[in-house]
Image (cartoon, rainbow, N blue to C red; front, side, top):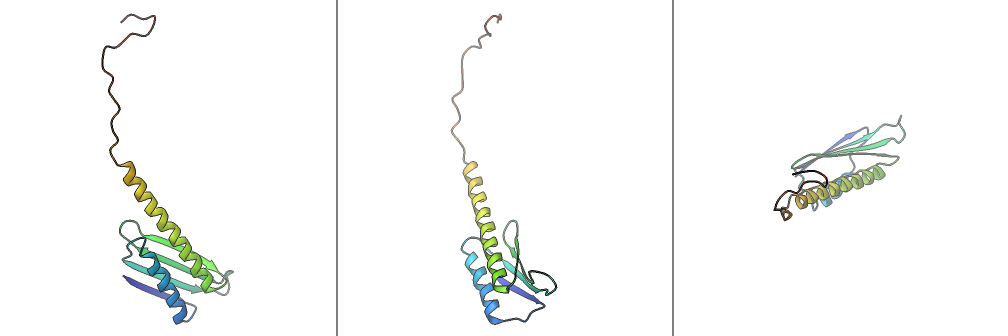
Length: 122
């Protein structure tokens, strides 16, 4: 798995990068992640000033999440929670689809003659 972190408007800090790496590695227990692209952005003219965008390349549909807050750590926590929620929903849909694809026993077939409705001739 490759993790690419892009910093826009803020310096790369080991503590922040380590937090991102740990959050993404914790998600590997739920889904196979081929690549993770993370974009950290600080725009002081906006409120909240910090935003984090994550794009996880996975088998099947990719998973994306965006979070914003007044500190970079809080924005990372928001994105991590959103990613976990999206991945758990993806896993739940997959297992529900597998359950619904199981073959159900067929209903017993009705045999015999057809009867005419009351008041009608057959």
